[in-house]
Length: 177
Image: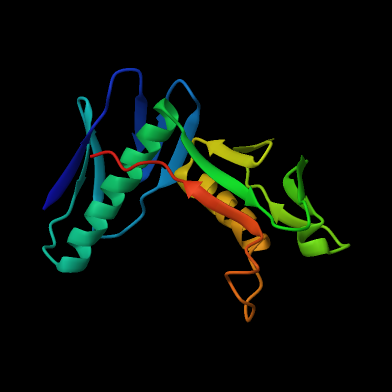
């Protein structure tokens, strides 16, 4: 049982044991595909994940590893971008980037600012009512967008139709087959 991923032009992939390093025009990503039943090897312009064991879980893991590698290749060539929208009704929110944190002031009239962590390798820009989160690692970009969304979530137990203030993800990277 095996899965293979084609390496496009302009992307360099190095396989060292079970550690795979992908570099391209936007940067470099490294990931450890460590599993005792799965072998990782580079053949010409493809990376092959293979296993001698034919089980459902191993087959699922092969597909997962294939998807991770495709996301790494897409990240170093195109990058990933999430768009979030700042929504408020009465109290205008002030959102700014300070170091490795997104600071949200005056959320629902609160005096204390709320802070969301920005992970390494991710850039956050605030442009008016939009927050743009971008980077080359899909997991870090998605986690940073989720951190921002979770910090400024509408309160639970209140009427959702009335308390709609918050920062919401409105656009994610599209899946390419």
